Image (tube, rainbow, N blue to C red):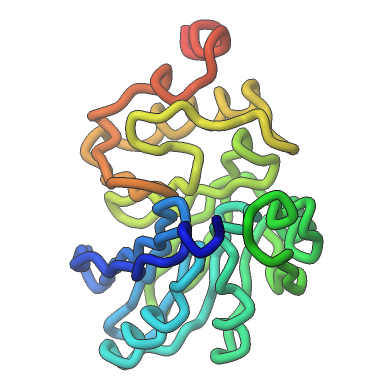
Length: 237
């Protein structure tokens, strides 16, 4: 089973340019999970979001091509498909891992990060270096910054990453999919509040880069598409 899930090569998708930022998407063969690399041309610094299976060699190639150093690894949450190459990148770069305390607490424990329940080797990693405690926090990247927003629901420690006209939503918003809240730490009520914040705060032309599958415009979806049944009407009324 593990060989079937991991046998296909990871794919690299053409970058999106936003001001001085470059955004690169790497799609893993493991559940079509998406890893993202954000490069800042002026400072030659980079951020990786959710380094899943097979991401490390592609990330290293991208950073060499763009002459960037990896400054941060940001985790939208702590499930194994989103953290599986964390150790490899940490070993290669002097970078800081950024996550909420809830996500950080999942990293050393295979049952918490769910690797114990997948057809892969149990996975463990050290705790995050920088813990996000606030509802929103700013992370400097050269002369610019990215903003991290708490968005619990899929897990208790989910983050959404904001850049100009772009959101990286992890598993909080996936195109045409209900968000999974049945796993440990999931909450339909928390998800509803997170979706309300996202849809009320950001414009419809904002590009959403999800944790799995294809990107989409925020205006091309609706909160009730992603929110579990029986909660969206109450929260979004």
